[in-house]
Length: 256
Image (cartoon, rainbow, N blue to C red):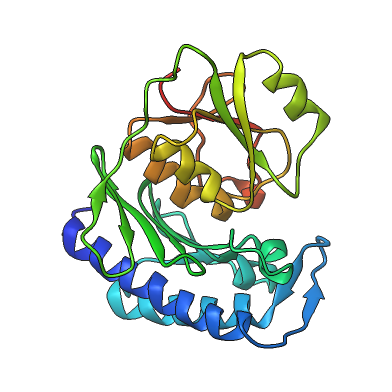
């Protein structure tokens, strides 16, 4: 499907920032949270941000369906058979949000034929936005400053910087990491881990735990545009539009 990608990514960045502003308003107040049927927490910020994103996407691209985390949890699953759809996690890292840590993000990705081709990750607490409109066209923007191109780095010879989940670290993850010479191990929350690899601040992010498509889609688009990869344990690219929308275990890499 042909798109005016520069115009489209500009619109998506605007939507993600609007959602982020609403999240920060709630973050700076007292708030409660609920526990969903999958035992994950949800706050009014998740729901308010998703409402902003859904309206924005409907205005921007009314013919493209949207698979969004909270709508899906409520049983509202669109027809994705056309192969092109938006993938939305309105507040990735809800545990970080609840615990008043800044590693929570807004995630919007475009899926075309099972691959994420465009993506935006906004970090509200930091005012940072990462966005990619295609291979080699990926940027980091601080506030309203000029966007700066980013890319993965060639892994240093004296050891890798590995990033792992703060809330979902598993023994399998540690066992995998032990295969490498590691100079530094960073714990971080949400899709920010994929951004750290994309901008050359980390080299490897193994995930041996449950994730959903909306958790990873925008980060994969950004990392691949920056020259990295997100692959299953057998080396296949991570695909989207799967039944149930669960991801297999995966490894995200820069240039190792």
